[in-house]
Image (tube, rainbow, N blue to C red; front, side):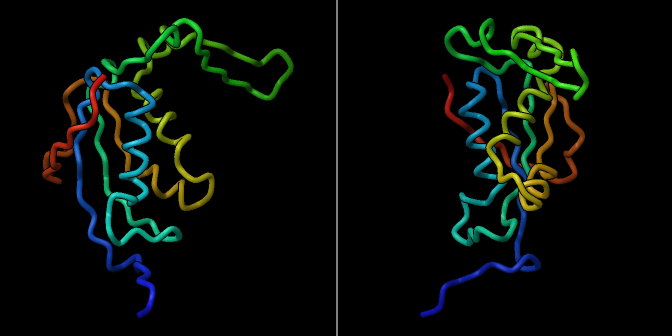
Amino acid sequence: MKTFMAKAQEIERKWYIIDADGVVLGRLASQVASILRGKTKPIFTPHVDTGDHVIVINCDKVVLTGNKLDDKVKKAYSGYPGGLKTTIYRKYLAEKSDEAVYEAVQGMLPKNSLGRAMIKKLRTYKGAEHNHQAQKPEALELFKR
């Protein structure tokens, strides 16, 4: 018996929509990353992008546990002396919650060309509106807090 290896042209991709209302950010990111990677499929192959497309809505209602809203810090360094900008997550989630979810998922994907291809299948939206109705996404329920 030979080991099955998926080929890129044989993969059928589905679209899933996930409501992030009341979901913990880290748990959301890990489950979305496994869907983007294709680990939920029986044809998972580590060196092939076998994942599905994911739409995350209501990113502004995502939850952080403990004191992370005030203790966790988003850092951005420009590369210049004195170019470090820090923002606490309470302010970061209020202003750019869709980017926070995007970066959390991106941190859980491989750091290579395969990971860059996987993250292109993620769409994040602050509210409940999205413009992907034509793809007929299936609703996917995740763990709540």
